[in-house]
Image (cartoon, rainbow, N blue to C red; front, top):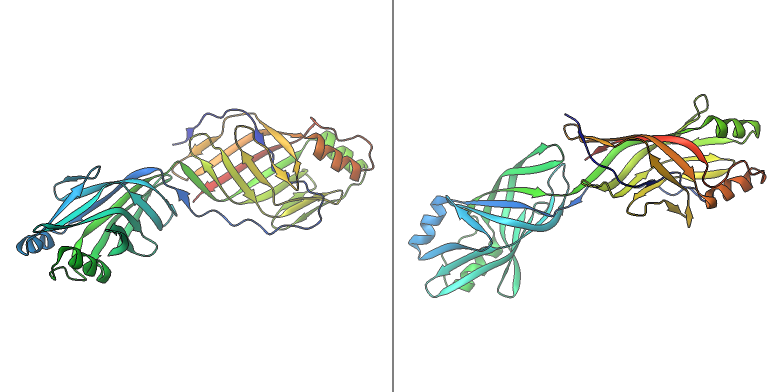
Length: 342
């Protein structure tokens, strides 16, 4: 099922004009997104809880964490993850308090670092990797990421810190603390691949042909002389899932009259533009709403008018002999893009 999102205003074009003949290295695809909310759960191991109670040790939670049926839920406060693998860090609100007699140890600022396979927390004045995290199964629902089945055990450093704080020796390294899972919420989409196509309008294609202005492509970009189509592979970028503000990066280069249009980056914001070497290349007027298909994590934008800026027009026209064939405000192409989120 395809879901359409509202689009407001205009976008910046990805032509990437620059006076330099040097071609920058292709951008590396973004692999992480910022996390804005969600929940991490920890189902405490019943056998361990009973053993701790026999030793006079109790485990409780600190708000805003909640507990129900032996499962502690920690609100996620931030972090970054790779949405495809869930590797990254999640910070949380709330914590745990472990008591033994009159002594207690509060585990605050709990962080799940799935890349390193550990839970860390502030115990007293020190930050301790108090538990090891292994396993976990990642599932996807559209752009969302969920992990279940982390196996959580008390680490050597965690056992040492707790025993010291509680004045006991009964907390053992390797003891199963429980099973964890996470459902992080993000409002970002990391782009992994795709293509942006720009088709020159007949007036511009004809003028360039009459002037015998050379058009050449450097891989992975391409130019189809028969149709006047420039294509750039999307190499990365990050978009806001609600308003699509962000960046779309590309690889390759196409040169017109020896002016390279290299590694363009679309910047989408309240005042969208693309600037390379101080030059705003063009604006885009969107002819129809973008469409998003969560099932395939794809984003498509069609019928985009490419309007040249004064600065870009001056640069290109100078290369064409100053004949005034290209002017600021002129629609020189119609574009489209199809991108896939990670």
